[in-house]
Image (tube, rainbow, N blue to C red):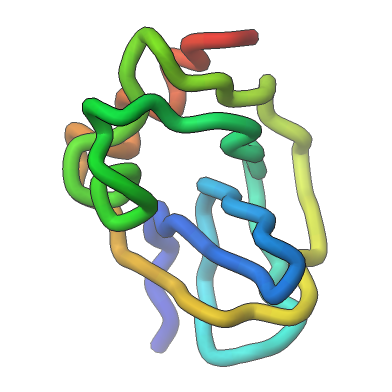
Length: 93
């Protein structure tokens, strides 16, 4: 049985997305409430930091799209609850 969870996804084209997925083993991944990280600040400490602590004020996170197909997946990170909340606060949007 699949469980919906918030993840951070990286792509071959250097895209970084956060959102809710049911199945992270497919390519493309179908993501609900998909947001893109256009820029993360140094205090986040990289893409894993986006999953561990979430974006901060210096990051550029888009407003969410209802649904997206994300192709060419290179990595999927489960996000902490606090990181998912930080994404939802939409620092840039």
